[in-house]
Image (cartoon, rainbow, N blue to C red; front, top):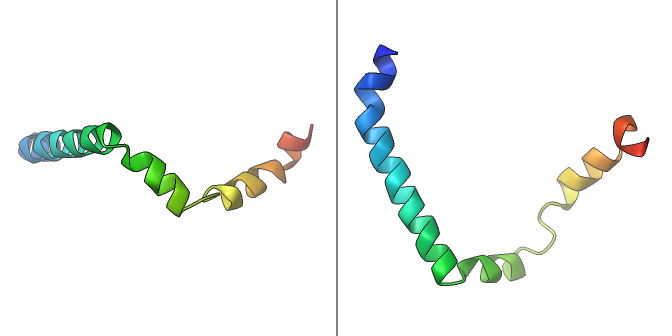
Length: 57
């Protein structure tokens, strides 16, 4: 817990900056451009999941 307490301020600031950046990205519709630039970027993960026995049942 002591390690967290010493870094808590930096962690909160970093999380806040990340949240603001993501809000701007959503407001400016950057996500759509990203999806067009990287179509089907989850295909490898999806194939691995679908090939498992549990997914086939």
